[in-house]
Length: 290
Picture 1 (cartoon, one colour):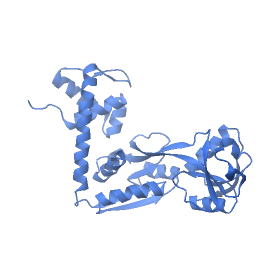
Picture 2 (cartoon, rainbow, N blue to C red):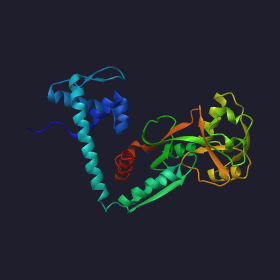
Picture 3 (tube, rainbow, N blue to C red):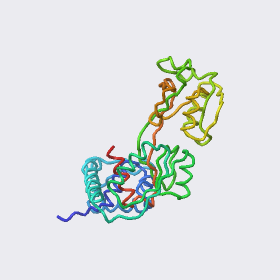
Picture 4 (cartoon, rainbow, N blue to C red):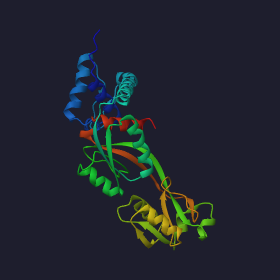
């Protein structure tokens, strides 16, 4: 019997099962909402069954929909695996990929893996603050971005990259250096060395202080994590940094901060129109394998 299921229909079904909304499913695949409606209807008409109970923004799977979800997801996983194998053995890809990122450590490691698979692609990377990264994506000045996206944007997809927490960095001779862990209240009255406006690290930390009713005392406002690190080493104040961005220093002690929400999730942010790009597909697959 010849299959009446197409790969776009399978993708549409799995997307709608995940998001329950035709609009959200369409956005996730970079297609129009009528396309998703047509693809789902095509499956249901071909097999004479209903896969979803239609409700506004909450289309739930029927019993038969639940039964076929796992095998159809497995089909997509196998297709992605095959695409990844083909991409990893392709030497014909040429061109360039323009990337904006916040964390140089994590991003550089991923780009190194990408270059092994796509040696003929030139990668241009700019490291900026989070708000600048979002602005560059919005203006389509870059192809992809690695940063914490505060909220979803129409025409963009976010793929989870990694999670991290902020930790304190204090001078080795500072009174807080001798405590096993710090609470957000420990920063009351302390002179702060902090990043410039637009930095997510700054935004998260000041919000935590404000939520605890602590007035911040900003002594130095600096434009890079390196300058913040050096200022703390010189004893000019205390600060915070993403846990994987700190370079050890003999005059700096790191401390875990407890009792405050200082966790964030970084994502690969892609414009929908770039989702079909072989280079972008390779990046997405590398992230999914981590």
